[in-house]
Length: 250
Length: 388
Image 1 (spheres, each protein chain N blue to C red):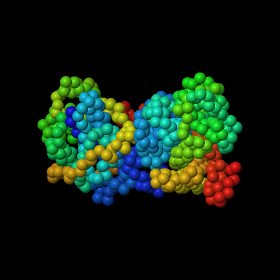
Image 2 (image 1 turned 180 degrees about the vertical axis):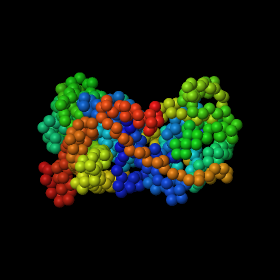
Image 3 (image 1 turned 90 degrees about the vertical axis):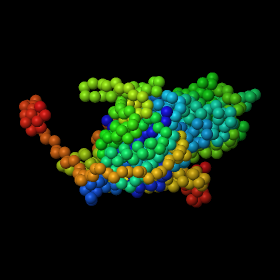
Image 4 (image 1 turned 45 degrees about the vertical axis):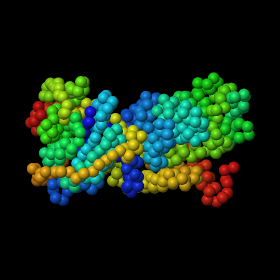
């Protein structure tokens, strides 16, 4: 099975974000980046499927600046076979253009399965998988947290409101991966050494005109300081009153 | 709880490393945070080593990581140094375990063993299926290993070894031991399976330091070793060449312990309030943190340079002495200053400071004490030997 995994370089969850002077983007100075954590599940699942079948290939692809080579190398170090970087200097916030550019590239490849994280933790759009499936004419299952492959057919489980849904689909398919699907492996040191010898192709991303524009970006308001209402059992009524009338959570 | 560790990099030393070196470092750093930090205090308290993590270390590829072939990763010297740094950020016992396996056991087999011996041991040592220990030091011969009493005598196709070794890391859990002995007027090394009759490892109990590490005595009573298991090197330069490798790792490793101390002390100073302000706002506290950051940064640069010299083949043992001596000293001082910043809280194992501090008392002592390394540097500078 030929598998393509779409990944993204995102600001690390523990990095400090500052808004740039234009008020529409983040200031890249001093920002630490990492592989989108949900994409780790997608890479791991691709490797597990390849190991299960004992055949096929895993290709990782991303759209971004040259810096995203680092995240591609990370995926190669874990065991992916080859990587592609679709270059652009734009900061893309439009899920539809991302999907269109990725679909254009995927159509040029032999591909039976596309895996991606459920969403990227920077823009949290959660649009890629269904958008891609539409472009490619593939089946689509989102937020998969259990997956089995037998006789060329996927059986996926996903959590929906108050229940667990079991869905099946044939290949070709686009699946978005949710936490719990698997336990991502660490890249091992031999893998890291091997990664630099694996192919990493670069091509300009074919991005359509964006349909969305970020108008402004602001940090969430700082959390107000906590309040101590008293000490011991005597202060319980005051606490209940505050929870009921001030915080309105009871 | 997730490990809050943030490594200090005041002068962007990161930019001096290659992308692979950073990737190796970050991988080991995450592994230590996610897999080792949650269990270390308990193991330190109980004086046990987390043996269940050995296969994971093997899978990562940290054993003999700079060696070529035989299932080893073949990393750059700087990358293998950074592995030691990240492991020792967790605990000096963890780094000691990996140093002994790679630098002291796999290195001599790789450098001085026959092809048959290499094939027999190295691949399984790389995965951690076989654990090694290194027997040089004896109870009465520490800084002066050349005076060792352990003897090997030829008998047909074998050598028969008698004697004892002390302060041997991994000595009780090892499957294979590299033992150095007086033999036919010189010092020779032997690769010994520890299940050989007459070989015994006995744990040394009640340590204040390196508690999460197996430190043992080896006793050899008429241990019969085939001649093919003798290493092809003569004299003290055999074991000393291994120590040069291990000291190189310690020079990087101790920076990790200092980093852990700095990180904990700095974070604590920002949240600990006395006289209605965080203690980080007091000049004396800042001065201590600055000292630590300053020394850590100097040591990072020294070790980076040492690593590049090792890769270029220009590193000499007396260069390693300077880095080992400096890193251990500044790391121990950093822990002492850090403990001071933590006040009374610093004496419990809710904080890692005293664990690192106690560990470093061993690290500054083993593989050449602070003073012995001073004398090695002094001999190089003056041409006068003050050791013998």
